[in-house]
Amino acid sequence: AQSVAQPEDQVNVAEGNPLTVKCTYSVSGNPYLFWYVQYPNRGLQFLLKYITGDNLVKGSYGFEAEFNKSQTSFHLKKPSALVSDSALYFCAVSVLRDSNYQLIWGAGTKLIIKP
Amino acid sequence: SAVISQKPSRDICQRGTSLTIQCQVDSQVTMMFWYRQQPGQSLTLIATANQGSEATYESGFVIDKFPISRPNLTFSTLTVSNMSPEDSSIYLCSGGYTTDTQYFGPGTRLTVL
Image (cartoon, rainbow over all chains, first blue to last red; front, top):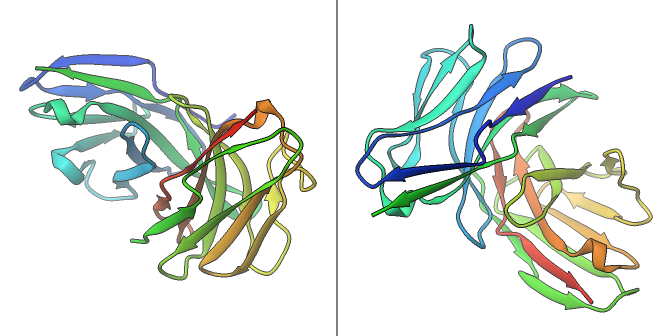
């Protein structure tokens, strides 16, 4: 079965430190991978995506993610965390179902940045 | 990108009534979807809204309970029918272009008493 795993329910990081939010996937073929962020009482905002090409993709708000095909991972990273980065982060993979592309979602990781 | 708006942003409804949520996109998107989300949890896909034809529902969701319309490429509605407290949730609309990024509306927070 195709799936996305975010192994950490919550990640705690001190402000100014680097952060990593983990994501692994299990899909057939070449995946399209996405990260979204959800701030409290808000909808989801697109952060970045990997379709093809360079394994390191850069996105909004200084975030980046590294695609690792051998480890089937797509971890989200930021060199220096801000308190305002505190939010719920979702990893997703696009899969073809019934001639339409749909997103399979991870469970989400709550990121808490402490001052 | 696409900017998506939803109405209403929130509502409190009585058991047994119905609520229609509207989703408007500022550009013609290929795909539109409706999701349900419990606060702090992941998204559950309700259905794919197909332009000019019946929506494609995911397992556990049926048309009688969640009728969906999509009369054109920029607009869709989701109705939550005969509501019960178990329908209390956040309902999210999204739109996108084939395999590419989905853009989300701000969500509709529904409370059923």
